[in-house]
Amino acid sequence: MSISQLPSSIRLVEVGLRDGLQSVPEMIPTANKVELVHLLIQAGVREIEAVSFAHPKVLPQLADAVDVMAAVPRVPGVRYRGLAPNFRGAERAVDCGLDEIVVVVSADEEVSLRNQRLTVDEILADLARIGALAQASGLRLVVAVACAFFAPARGPVTGAERLRVVDAAVAAGAAGIYLAATSGEEHPGEMYDGVTEVRRLHPQLDVGVHLHNRNGFAPANALACMMAGATWLEGSFAGLGGDLWFPGDPSVLGNAALEDIIHLCDGLGIDTGIDLAKYMAVSDRIVELTGRPSASFVSRGGTRSGLASARWPETV
Image (spheres, rainbow, N blue to C red):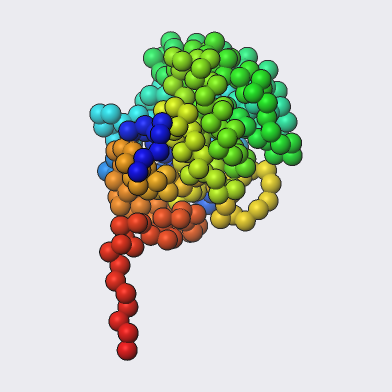
């Protein structure tokens, strides 16, 4: 049985080393971060958001970005991405061996002010400068539209607000954008419509989605976005990450667990190029390093094949 409109393959982007670890206050040594990169590559991951160039005082966990990039393996076909929160961060990023720079712009004004202490207009003005720098440096620019569908302390974000950022990203020379389900309260219908609209208006643009899972809809949202034509999905090992604004059970506040997305795609015959068993070893390792339990369903409940091969216990 197949579901119409699903692709035969999908790109998966690992964001755990950046968006996951930034929520961990205990310092993870640089050597362990590089170890995780090696394990990810062995599992078949080919797109890795490895570092952030935020000010070290803001994100001390990610202050070793230059050292991480100096030590990661250079493997054909593997692309490294780094987050640049502003022009100064982008200047630091261009000389570190990255393939892509990602800039986050919130579609919601209040989130922009609280998270980046800048208005959306101020960030978009910086975006144009970063785009020019990326082009001059031969790097691919990716723009993240944060709160693309729903914002905390507010509710739904309008299509006009979302497209304002998308259009500015295109004008800045972005080769790709991703629509971020930042709050984790997004639903499949609005995500399908959002991806469809962006692809219709900007058919040349590489369009992905970044998934959170507060409401448990991440797998359904992944399906909806693939059906709408998204070319990549983003998640984090063990679902590591966190909601930066509002309280809730920590087990539901992180990024979508990428192993759950891999498991979903495997079941549907959608090729990701990633070996689930090897990837789960990466998730086990991050649990060891951080002491935080996995938020992944497949890690806690097992795989389909694992359950099929299980045997009933002996009865007395």
